[in-house]
Amino acid sequence: MGGIRAVRAGQLDIAVSARAASPAESQNSLRAVEYARTPVVFATHPDTAAQSLGLREAIGMIDGTITHWPDGMLVRVSRRPDLDGDTRILASLSPDMAAAVAAMQRRAGVFAAGTDHDQAEALEAQPGTLGVLSLSLILCESRRLKTLPLREPPPSPMLKSLFAVTRADAPPKTEAFLGLIWSEDARRILAAHGNFPLPAA
Image 1 (cartoon, rainbow, N blue to C red):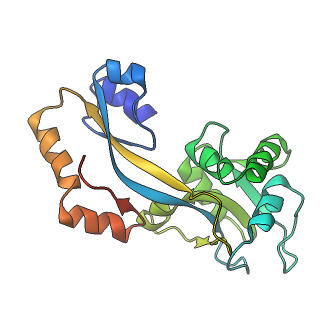
Image 2 (tube, rainbow, N blue to C red):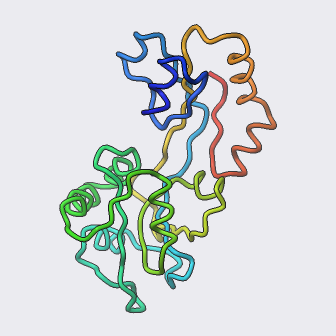
């Protein structure tokens, strides 16, 4: 959101955002182009013994009814704010997960990470952690984290959209840079770092 405000104020030419410009922002001459999607994944410290999660197990850990990993290690959940995109994506996984997320947000003693970077650092801090984070951030920043795939297909995919946000009257140099996003080299780089590149709009 800060990046979008900076573009609107003329302090940035381009911002990367996990949401499109709102109707009000679009009326203020902003343009958002979706260029990729990245999975939102369950992640933990690499020394956590688990290699995957069952959906019911994940729901129980999120809502606090499952307090320990199968090997007896304490589950240490790290959450994002209610309105954060990753929180909404996690809640959209299923109605039971939505209820679990609501319970997690009310539960005392759960670490609250204000940003993606705070979340990554919290999950890296000690074994037993659990939270969600975009795969692209984990790979781009070479985070020391282990991803935990669900053992059964999820009811809905957990995907985060990535947008390039500019002013509608962006200068030619900005338009030229945006054009690079659709190049084959850029698509290869995006794919190598946990993204699904989208075709040019």
